[in-house]
Length: 361
Image (tube, rainbow, N blue to C red; front, side, top):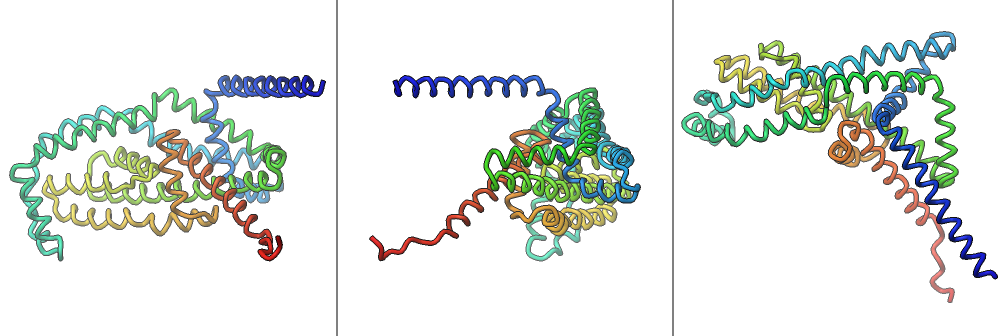
């Protein structure tokens, strides 16, 4: 009798789990078109929640006024520049592809005299430059062209069409406004779910996830914006053509943790090829500064949001980008940060327990 009851309990439990799993899978499948917008809106709201509270204090405690202001700020500061960067690259993908095809026709000028005066690497760099200028430019172009074309295709595949991008950003703004208005209720529900799932550690994991999102948003997006802005100023001042397109590319490359140097060095090479050696040298010095400024800005911003190892954040950004696309720059660090803190809490809890007395049998 007991065996039959036990078997029935197991069968009932398995069927209940399968039924709940089916409901969850079906719900996610229905919500799949909206998930990117929901994720982006969540990241934005979590990162900018302190700003909302400050604005609400200034507006006599009126939440709806604060939500309106934050939505407008979101459109002007985040959505508009980011969408313009993406749309600029998508709409000018043919021009970028034309640059790739024109690589084979470029003629590299002889190395400048000052290059040999650089200590340690000057002579070797001048010899390599001279070899490329003499006979190696076509081979170099043939080697670089497939990678450049693949990079352009990757951008276009990741970003999609203009209509889909516009729709995703519109949904993101709407979802962000809803979350701004009901933030406390949503936060309490998520914390209750975490506490129900794993007790105190689950609730702490939810809090850590919010801190990780805020840290990554400040560190990654803020640093990318600063680097792209500085790099764009350098390109515009030195007269490099299509500075807007190149600035948009720099912003996305900085988001992807590749950095702005690829685009800036392209501008330096074009200036040398066009005969503007002075501007090229100035842009080269500016590029070195812009390419290294993230080593100072990013750790400061990330530490302000979440006290997490920088290597963990960078690994999560790069891995998340590869696994989930652009939205993975937030999902990856968040998952790694939560896993790291849960493992750290579990280890510390084990170490805090009194060790058994070796003398007792």
